Amino acid sequence: GQNIDQPTEMTATEGAIVQINCTYQTSGFNGLFWYQQHAGEAPTFLSYNVLDGLEEKGRFSSFLSRSKGYSYLLLKELQMKDSASYLCAVVDSNYQLIWGAGTKLIIKP
Amino acid sequence: DAMVIQNPRYQVTQFGKPVTLSCSQTLNHNVMYWYQQKSSQAPKLLFHYYDKDFNNEADTPDNFQSRRPNTSFCFLDIRSPGLGDAAMYLCATSGTGGGTDTQYFGPGTRLTVL
Image 1 (cartoon, each protein chain N blue to C red):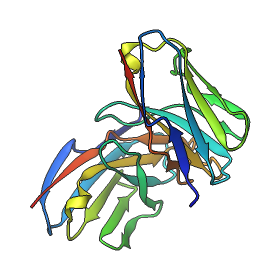
Image 2 (image 1 turned 90 degrees about the vertical axis):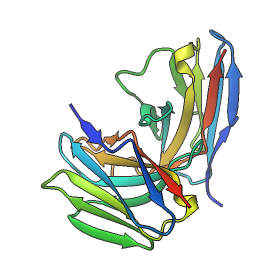
Image 3 (image 1 turned 180 degrees about the vertical axis):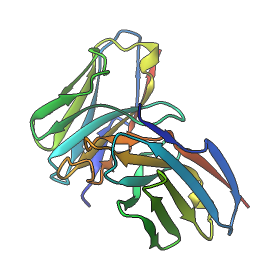
């Protein structure tokens, strides 16, 4: 079967750095997305990785290791508005998008 | 601004009473998707249209139907809602429909079944 694993919930402090991990076991791999979803709202695109390494985009960075079936999303200089769920989604060999259940990030002052 | 619009944002229906959710897009994308998302769960793809070609996921119940009368609009019909169908329903679009294409989501419709 196909599986995406993310921690259910994480807590961090405003101004700090947090890393949200995602491990996957899928039939093939054609890329990995990270989406942000605020409570009661739609997911919004954050990043897409298809090659190994770190991609930085402002306060957010995403890392991929295809050999390890592993990605992480790194959030720096945390702000209260970063409180949201972060969903990892993998494109499999059939170009289907396999979604994780998301990690709920709670930011405390 | 180009966007994906869903109406209504909140929908209440009674057990067994048919309901229709709507989605429109101004992005001129070829592909439109319908997802069901329950609390703290991954979005579950129900079906998608590549232009007018309808693609049903194997495990989508027959109770769920969809229509896409034109490029801009797509509808989700739930013929006989059950209590288990209470969820957020998300509409999304993408340009080409390839799995590597970014999907753009509407704000969702939260369905309550009484």
